[in-house]
Image (cartoon, rainbow, N blue to C red; front, side, top):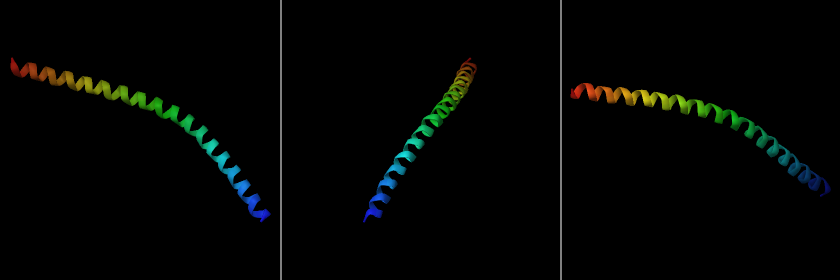
Length: 64
């Protein structure tokens, strides 16, 4: 019975450490992902702007 209690205590403590380490890694990884997300968002916005300008110019050339 005492061995089971020790096992449960150690098991709970190891889970707490693991979740804390995972959380710290997640925050570091999250900042990297956020950085790349901003870069990709800027690139896609630029491409959408170029495509919109091309579409508008084609519409204006077709109507004249």
